[in-house]
Amino acid sequence: MRQTFLTRILHKFVVGSKKIYANPQLAYSLFVSIFVVVGFFVTAFVFIRITQDAQDRLITVRVGALHDGFSFFAAENIDEPQALRRAMARLALADATLRDLQVVTVDASGERMIIADLIEDENPVLEEQYNFAYDFSSGRPGDSFTFTIEYEGARQFITVRKLDEVQDVWFLTRQSLSEADRIVDQNILYAILMMLLIVIAILFLFLRQTKVVDYFHLYKKLQIKHKEKDSFISTAAHELRAPLAAIRGYAENLKDEKLSEKGKEHLGVVELKSGQLSDLIDDILDVARIQEGRLAINATSVKPMDVVDDVCNTLRVSAEQKGLELVCKEEGNVANVFVDEKRLQQILINLVGNAIKYTEKGTVTLSTKQQGGTVYFSVEDTGIGIGGEHQKHLFDKFYRVQSEKTSNIVGTGLGLWISKRIIELMGGAISVESLENVGTKFTIAFPVEE
Ligand code: ADP
Image (tube, rainbow, N blue to C red; front, top):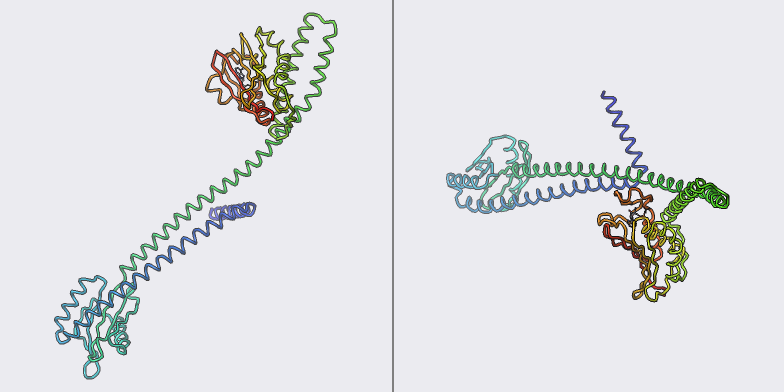
């Protein structure tokens, strides 16, 4: 059990290391993460040390001031131990860090003698330290000396002063820094907890980032697959072209043959369906060209009304077959535009073709006009119209309005997507206005040729 757990951890470590090696951005993130954690740790501890240092200095200054005051008082009252003791008690009450206070002198034989004291804790270890302190300060009367010792697990400040040069009298205090150190330790604990939180947060971010790297690789793979699929579709569409052209050619030849009524009817279906298939293949190839950015635009100076006439001639029969009136007109004089004529024709055939497809009765109007520096082509019908919620998606790829009225009308949802892209490639814009059951108007705008 233990073995498998360790093996799993080791395996994860190896996999993780390989992943980091293969993705330099992860190594960079890891480096930044470690840098942030270490940076925080160092800053926090430097800050705590500075605070502790400042605190120690403050305590030293305070005890120095206390020694200044008390030494003065002690020198005056050296013969009144009771008064000295009372004063010491008051000092101890005012400052909770004070543990021991002592005023000592030496007798004629040189033995140290306590004049007054307030000792919390009789201890030979401390006594030894105090003796050292008295000896140490003897050479510099009037100055306070503070040094630190470790006693019962807490730091202690021992401060000592020989009152003056004249009398052999010393004043000593011991302060416990346990409270101050406890606060520092607490802050260190907070810093460690904070650091743990930061480490967890960074670990979490790091794991998220490894996921993002996974997604990135997945995205790259998908992109390749997507490209393969697109290229397969466009190759397949290309390959379909030749046999389809042959079918259409043979169907055309059959028109010259003597055929029964049934035969003529069947030939008509073959022509219609093969025409639809040919349009679909053209659409698929156009989509591929646009997506790969290789749709060539051969712009020349084009007279708008010429294109309008061509489109109307192409679609007049279709409109008449549906009993629709097809109106083609030029409003006023319209200047030339600089576009690809074949592509403009293709777009207008698509729009007028849609207008015929989605109109039951009435009129389809294809017109052109000029306003200022802009030439407009509009295709207006009295058909089924398009609801507001569909209009914003109309130029999306494969978007088709799904309704009872459109359910029997065949289409791919590619025509408007292709038209919009080609119009934009030629520097124009397309817009739509429509009311359900009233009709639709598509407007294309191109700048006048300069
Ligand atoms: P489709 O091959 O489906 O006609 P298009 O891209 O040309 O594809 O058109 C997208 C959708 O927009 C159509 O399916 C149809 O619902 C709607 N549409 C386009 N033109 C008209 C129109 N003149 N009147 C009503 N709806 C239209």
